Length: 103
Image 1 (cartoon, helix red, strand yellow):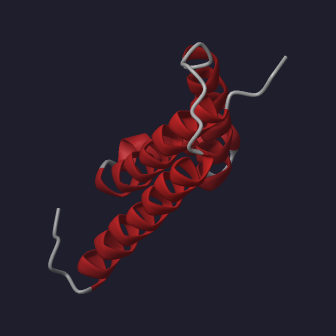
Image 2 (spheres, rainbow, N blue to C red):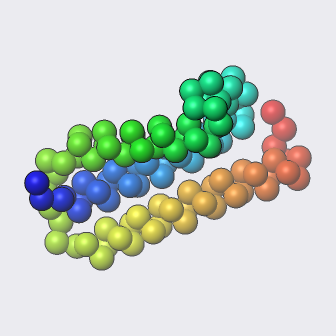
C-alpha cells in the first residue's frame, strides 16, 4: 500500500480542527468533558484516542484523493493549521482566564 501524502495532509488538518473543537467544547460544556472522562479516565487521554480514531477514518475516507506533487505546500498547510489551532486554543484560554469569556 502506497501512502497518499494528500490524504495525510487532509486528515491531519481535519484532526487539528477536531482537537480544537473538542478542547473548546470541553471547556464550554462540562457534560462533554465528563463524557470524555468517563470514556478514558481523563479528558486529555480521551481526546487523544478520539483524535487518533478520527485521523485513521479521515485518512481512509480521503485515501482515494489524487496524489499531489506539492508535498512542500501540503506541509506548509499542515503547519499553518497547527499554528492556527494553537492560537485559537491559547486565545480561548487567555480570554477565559481574563474573564472576558464568561459562560
